[in-house]
Image (tube, rainbow, N blue to C red; front, top):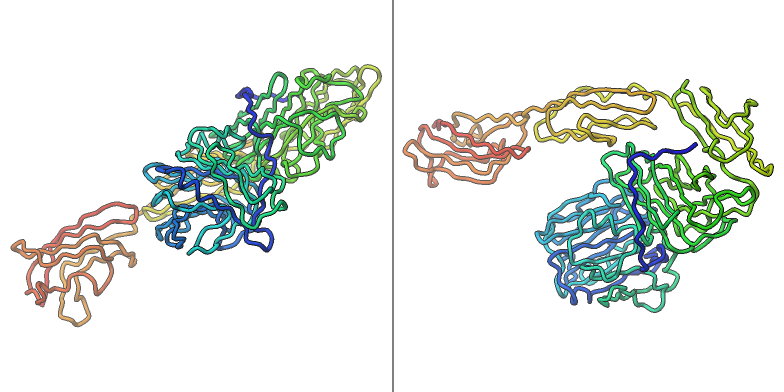
Length: 630
């Protein structure tokens, strides 16, 4: 059955000659030695008023202490003088810098070890910092500074009082240092492809394709900022699984509904992605203009290039269409049928056939519900002419439709001359309202026959659900309403978002629709906010040192403390008798003790001015009369 791709973005291949796929990377600290790279000279050759570092990493171990992917340190090496560090820690990334109040700033999101991630650190000229993971902004922060001449730079560890510290365990590839602040668009444009080493603003470019000769890590930019590899040998250079091509395109949409995009690599050669499921923030297609590093598992005439798909999360699914008319062989021959083979990434030694549906009338092969060979977020694809006999895919692996709906199985576009279905019918189009396994046998010219089967699955209507009881929270709180766990549905929140949760900061009627092609389930919850910080100001106090009501201070309901920026007390003639800043409410021995210039003030009426800040950041000023009793 042909697939229709609405909202299609057509992007032509421009091409460059800077690399061919991801080649090799370094594997750090996965043995007993302490391995790292230093490249301090780049800080002497270039000044930084702003900074960007981008890198592909595959953490292979996680712990509470974490490991430094890369680090800028002041020459002293003192831990307190860390400048800009990026760590992997347990299941997330962290930014460190020298200000103790900013240590250990974690990214949002869940990033378990054992997977490749693209990490980008950006600090602009105003020291506004951001971290991106897989092209998505995961952290904002205020940096203290950017590196200066004389600082140190290392990969795989950070200097702590001149000692090796924070060893990173995993694989590192395509590390690029810039003396400019990359935009989100620029990060996405460069992450899944090699780039021109002469790109403006690029200070150092380590592609880790040295293959382990000597202890020099080459900077392939013209700047000559080579690194020194400590305790490395050829065994630490391994085949890289980073999703790097010679060209790439990407989409980061607000919704995946009716979204499709493709990368065209010359006339008649393209890969198209559509029907993206499980709501990844974005997806990339990349193109490698060379033969793969291995053809193990492939029994076909090898072509000279291949495509890859990378999604920003770990559980995406999608459909592909591979256009192959530009490869110079017939779209269909009975004994030499085109096939698609796939592998997760460049580091996987074996390709696997994926039984795509070949459409001989327009030389395309499609695969619906593509979820990868064990890793659904990414896959690489190559096509060629099989040397086997007549194994063309006639039907998709499965068809999903609503119960009792009419399911149409269509093989009319394959160029067959005769058809036979499992129920004995002989049309090129088969309709059923049932579910189960159905097969068809197609006879082509010359008597060549092929048989293929499909599983027809009934989709359920979304189940009724509850978002829970209405919520009453304090002003300034952040409330998260979580969606139920249901598969095969789209989330549609009342604020227009499509994630599996909604953040509520103000009075709202939160509505969630769970929708698929078979129907919609809806629920609503009301989120209200109240002022939990109700303030009481005493109108009198008796500072007679009996331990009861000896100090004048404000009280807050339920003993919730508020920060008082300033409290000032005046006598009836306007003279200031008390002035104190930066203390907390509800303290029985903090505030005015009734003394003026070290002596007890007389019983009288006084006037107060109190300035305070509530948790939601609201500034309030209180004034009134106060009676001092002796």
